[in-house]
Image 1 (cartoon, chains in turn orange, purple):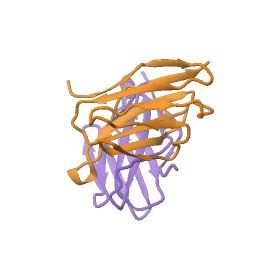
Image 2 (cartoon, rainbow over the protein chains, first blue to last red; image 1 turned 30 degrees about the vertical axis):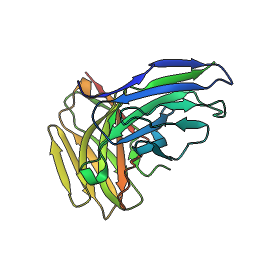
Image 3 (cartoon, each protein chain N blue to C red; image 1 turned 90 degrees about the horizontal axis):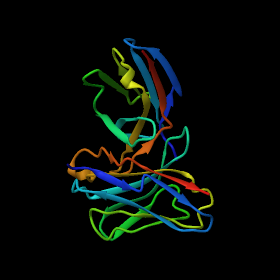
Length: 115
Length: 112
């Protein structure tokens, strides 16, 4: 099955801890994205990447870090500098605009709760 | 920054009725997309309409785009209880940006 997976589904973090959320895709997409969703809100872009070893900040990158060492993988680390990390995190992937349609395919999400 | 704003924020209808959701945006776009999200799940792409298109259909979905008014509407005909979800519009801005900007969504409840 082609798709995009996220793990874990639920994650609990203590104050001051860094945690890493996993995102993997086998759709051969070049672009990958991380979003944060708070209750009753839309999606806000944290980071995105168009190519291996390159990524750009989105609208709310402070307190987060990413890496793109492989085309298939785009992990997100929520650092202790993120003051209010409790949220639902969504990973997505897409082809690049020049390759045609840029609709995004989403993973099932990770719900992060700070204890 | 959120470009799209959906209206209404919440909509409750009976099965069999039509549901209309609206989206307004601020800047020029390449395309506008509608997504669906079931509670606690990821988003699923429904339909994409390009800036040079005015109307598009996919099954029970009909999307219109009015670039002069910077607005779009999503119509779901003959709604079913399974259509209960949140619906988001997302805009891809001109300039070749690969980013999408999402609105806050319309929460649709279809009562059996």
